[in-house]
Image (cartoon, each protein chain N blue to C red):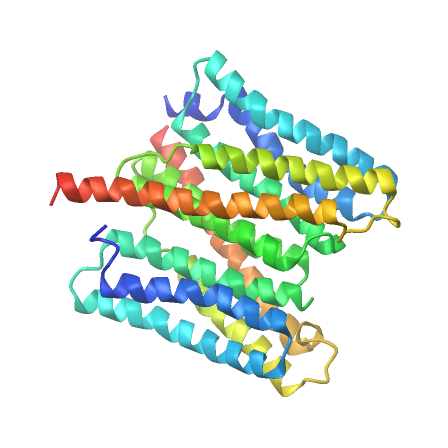
Length: 194
Length: 188
């Protein structure tokens, strides 16, 4: 039963996103416009796996609790890998990265705290919006670097910083939304079990 | 919600809020800010002992407090290490190792709980909790005492302190991964 929950095609697709993270870091920090384009293609594939794994899980009727944990974890690891490459290249200020790091960390602990209630913390819509906006911002910025070239790209241009700022703002909103969601679960428990 | 608003949990939450404060101080790059950051690291370390003491004083520590304590520790520590990253004292790859261990272990914990074998407090968690504040303290003290050095992360003592912090994080991650693999094998 448990083995069948872990070894599913959907989980294999999800896990591939974790492997993509370090490869993307290397491609984006190699200071080569050609490798930036390769990185961009890999990033688009990684974003597609985020869509495909859910479809595969539902289509094969193998939506597992393990998958519900693996999917957000793979998302965190992959996206923070891309953002750390942005920080290394000086495309993103540390304070924006900090908000993303704290959001992911807090949600990972909230998931563990929700398990205390014997409830799996499912993805909330704010988490999905965060993933979409972060994906667009990452692909948008790397696409701009590819078009202008590594040496001519201006990381502090309005467009690049605007995209990253919107992604950071949606991430911060998602953090508060998850905290409110878990608080609601515990408040319900206070009412039902005084 | 009553479970959250106990004295030890409020102390833990205060520690979490010190993380962003230390990051702001470190980014500001002023000498007095480094001194204040060092003071806050010391205060946060003391609060880690104090919340445990308060929890024991009020009877059996609640399970939720254990998780909250771990979360607040991680939020604070990452705030400090992000500050070191901003100063280029900590290589990005080292930061990623610390961050990945902090992110992955709670997910492993949620999975371990699902299969009916929740984590107990492990030696590796205690090791990490002891080594991280010492490393932070050493690095900040080096930066304060040697303001003319190229960077606290470039001094021998700085590299040793940060290396120890990263190794403690790797041990923390590896220990919990091995534990999950063994317990999953048992559950299967």
